[in-house]
Image: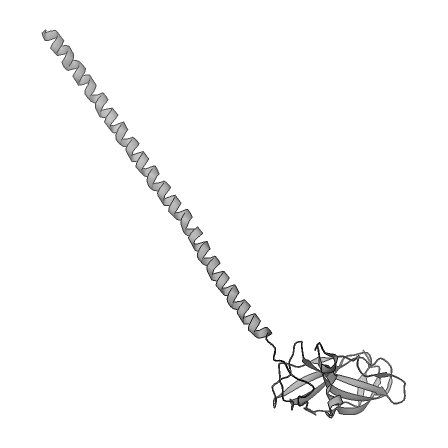
Length: 216
């Protein structure tokens, strides 16, 4: 009987370390599980944040795009002008040189004032540019419509004055020419709304030049 009790005590003592080990293993497993759960939750949160940010960015980009479209639509609204009944006017100050080159771009600087009752646009429709005509005096060369056009620096309201660099570069044959600088309205759908200002009674800037080859 005493031997059995001693044997049971020994077995009990042997079981204690095993129980302690099992407890620690269980505890470690719980800690590992909790750690894994926390890391997984944090990872999900981090992944969700950029997605939300992308959605916000997309929303702001869409709003920005809509704003830009609205501005573009407002800019595209062109005031319809009855050119047949409008006041057409321009005053030019400058001088045409007595000599121009056939083999170079010639620039004539002028000042021009808008005396019309509408704004001169720099884009179609109804764009106003500066052109010119030339007539040979001792040579048989003439061009009225197909000469170069020079752009205004900006839209010009009635009463405003701007400086324009007028390009003369279409005369290829030497000789004496009458050159006439003339504003032109172009880019309208109706042919009658496209015209040289001189056809409406506006005075051109006129001068005589000898056009020849210039040395390199």
